[in-house]
Image (cartoon, rainbow, N blue to C red; front, side):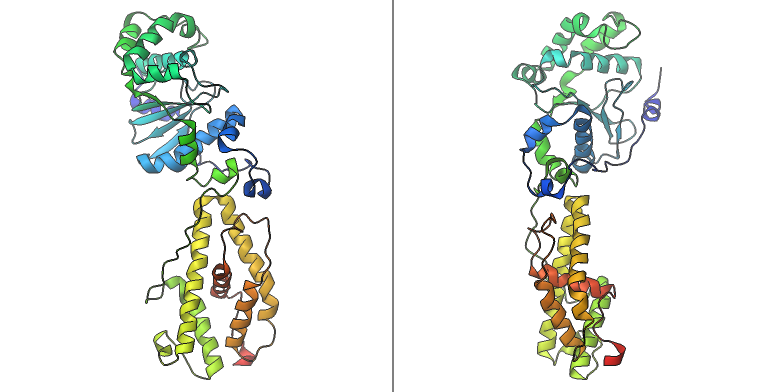
Length: 373
């Protein structure tokens, strides 16, 4: 008999879903034409299995503390499509049944038979939970079976010969008798459950792959940006240093810290505003990472577009570095950006100004030139 560890070795761990190729264009992401539940039903069987994998990996894994998620769907999967491990021997099974109509009891007898047959053989251990995943959900009759494990077990026994005996393996009929029958009769069918499609979509919305599957930025950005602390964050070092040089170029004084501006309220207040702008754009960047790999790409495009719009103004002749800063900040707010960018409904003027300081952090924008000092 195979051990629990043998079960682990037979499964091949795959990388987390890439999310590529689900939606053809940015226009579809920005303006989805079908309701999510309709799109769910329009997926192919392979796409639906990928969708479930994304959901388990991106949402359920965080809630259930799964150590890893593996996929074992396809020929020879022995009735397991997506498998998630809490540890080496404790696991959940997500079995995908891609039917256009709601699942009926006759749709699941074969899968339950496989579950009993292969666990009784020792090919893999009994999971903690066994979920049926279907784009149209389950019908009322099957729902009644799942609510009553004893009825579910009796239904499987009664329907074994008709729906299971010839369909568990391709080599032999599997007759329900002897040790196998005793195993089925003592099996705990309360582990068998289902996830409603709308609940599945709602939770998938919290993964980075959702906009690829369904279009639209379903998750909205929180508009409240944390107030910068009195202590500088290490990521602020360079742009603050540049601002202090620009202030010094304007006032013909030397400023080396925030405290050195205490007697210059106009400059001190200006710097405080710039820090708010910087962290506003930081929040937009983090938001883009949280919702979608595609959105993160669009944040980088947003940043590049701002740079392209202001670089000529930055490189123009200015009386001093502070005047250059103000001219570039004013120009950033006036930037006309790509209307197909999926973040277009999320950014605001503060984000545009904050990007200026991101670029200054990278020395792509320089406020004080050698010949101006």
